[in-house]
Length: 465
Ligand code: TYD
Ligand code: MG
Image (tube, rainbow, N blue to C red; front, top):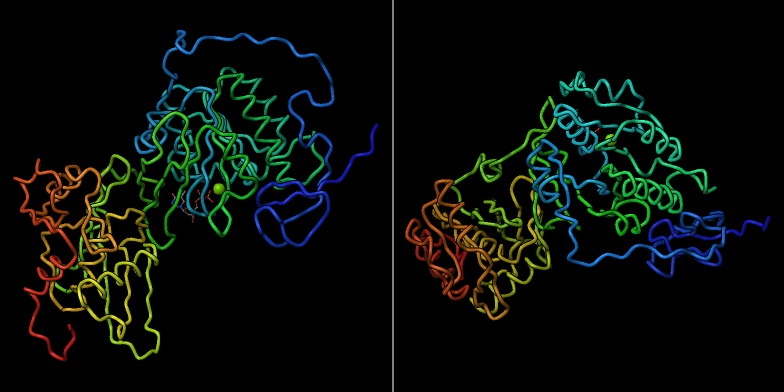
């Protein structure tokens, strides 16, 4: 037998190097390269055997294969994110920080599906059966008939699934603990994670069993192990949230069978995760309406509108370089809004510390949040309390113009539903639902500043300029 050659594999990006070095040239990560045996590492199903290959059956694009058959997970928020239920034979990766509730979510899904008669297998590579049973008791799922296994060897798992009768869903918790006989490296290394997922995904496609992998996430927010797992699976979902807050958000970052911009919202309670069907109410729960510096942003997450409070605090600075701190929003976006306020609206901010916070630990990614952030900052600076019945949305361009954003109607409808009676939005944007709400349209940031300044209390110490 040929001498097994050693490879040096970056544990961060999966690049194979010919020799060891302190820094991966491909992804720039330090200390991420470890030595792994190359035997079978790059192999497909029958690596080693050289065969001539056989022709495969080809079908036309329009041949009758039908819609991808889906089965509901019994949890509406999860179904929404995967695009209407788990597809037969698909592989889904659910990533998230440790302790965020991945095992809880998947055990609940397994329980719901088993309750409706599915044959569900839950393989735990991290916890002993007793621990999983304890969690199931806590979730009230002891008697639903989920088959539980504690195993980390992929060949044993595939044999177990093969011995069961038509398994509908198999949960693998977690993919980082799995290892296959074909590779010498330790579990958790890139080659092991890659080869194990490959084998399990191949089994899923062959048998029609849907497989959900749990994946841990590294400090910088990537799924630990190779990115290649993300490429191999059909859908990648991130389960995120703040451990100091109750709510959790499931977000699709890749989905071969559905949209990627949908979110599912859950609340972690004593007896597991509860679906939150009206998230705006959750994010606005204990809103402070009497002090300056808060504005409600009408956001869109996929097809779902969401109202979120943006808070700002402006304080006189004693520092040479004033502080800019932002939680839940992009700091360069804040810098941009501040620069526009300074240079287009004549508001001096260089002597002030500015803090911006998105309530509830939510992370905003939409540029449409600019207007709400701007309103909160101007309100905090001038001391003018913004009308509690208003929502804000609009993108601010560098010229100071307020630009149109997508789906204004859905945003306005959600605001109306939650009792808001006014909206400040870009000029020229749709007028459909305008009749229910008292809409003020602003063409540029200066209009907004003038609007807020008109309600400001008389300046006490030259706060505004
Ligand atoms: P877990 O699902 O084990 O997280 P992960 O698999 O992502 O590491 O969830 C762990 C946390 O969830 C733990 O801190 C306790 C909390 N929890 C609840 O608050 N309520 C519950 O019903 C359960 C089962 C867990
Ligand atoms: Mg877990």
